[in-house]
Image (cartoon, rainbow, N blue to C red):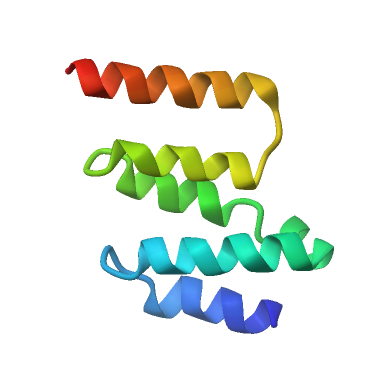
Length: 84
């Protein structure tokens, strides 16, 4: 399964299917610890690519990292983007 995820990420991912891939990655991340460890960079890169057009996507990071500081930063970023 990890190989399939890496193949899609490297070869088939574009702006249109990134949100769907992120949702699938969230599911696989919860299901399999090996995938969670090996694919931990992917969500951050996807969110970084989509955040300018969709600030709410940064909330997805809470599914991949339970760090309370990160969660506070996510909320601060979303609030700032709404005020811009």
